Length: 105
Image (cartoon, rainbow, N blue to C red; front, side, top):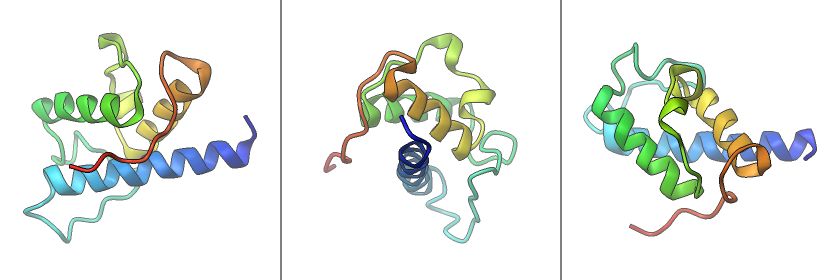
């Protein structure tokens, strides 16, 4: 996969995940700035239960299996970490499918 395509996939994953986090965890704090490199756990955006919900969202949205040992801060600590991790899983570097459009809720 070329670098440009990889960057586009990562950007799409980050944006979709950011929208999910804003809607489900920051709905009471609409002015909260959420950058790609801001910590999700240490900053109080997501708690331990929220991590489980986030993993479910990622698995459903991006059709990838996330193993228990992959649920780490290195893979899920920031939006940028999530984007890199999911892009790698969805592109042959792990069990997973492809990036697909969000499902209507």
